[in-house]
Image (cartoon, rainbow, N blue to C red; front, side, top):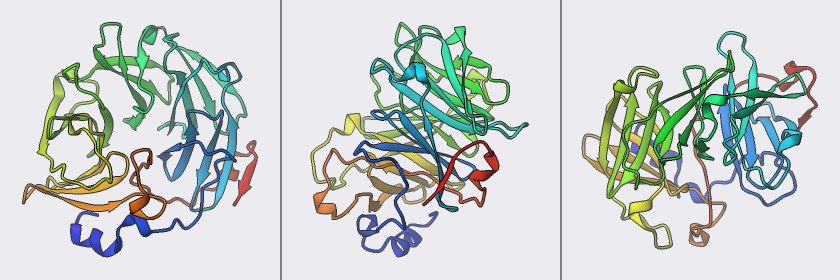
Length: 309
């Protein structure tokens, strides 16, 4: 989607009128499920539901997992991450209690059938951001806050299962909706401030001094969402940063926008809704990602109960 004209041709009528090729299984509930992908596999999870799913949309297979037994209480708000270790090639689901600050993670290695508890005293007392997990350099990452509300980044090494805390860029504490991203294979942090989208890039992994403002984009917020919203508290998720400086991003979890570095203008690509765009409201939530299909069969995990759909 490097060319707005391409986007227009392939989303004629807008994304709102497009119908999914199939519905990915996610139980019987009406809960909102978020997805994360690793090598063509999707992890689907919900705040309200205790079941999670590993799915390959291309092979139309899924595995249903239950959250760790000790985390089924309503007092637990679990944040999940999903990735594959770079050396051993093991697929792992990692979760932690967002509010507990207890300094531990639970790890499920696909094919084993069991959750393991991993102690991590270095993160004790930190508050985790629920939707701020991303895989980069073989590590899962969360944005976390210490007791002074200073922003840090927590890294979980998928190979060694060691946990580290390292510095985030100096962001004004009044800034909301801070997002972790991976752009150009580098760990990035983005947020909106006034009418600008700011993207920081960590040029050298885990080197705090290498945080650099990669781009600061003046964004046209004159987009018809069908309801009023505050531009100073807008959620903007950069999806791809192209070599020529163009950016594909998602506004307010529903509107795809393309920014041209050459013309310094933004163009609405489409609106993500389940039906008629006139029916969209501020309670609708969508999520977009760059997805690369894979022919990997979930049956290779052996022990797991794989269902086709």
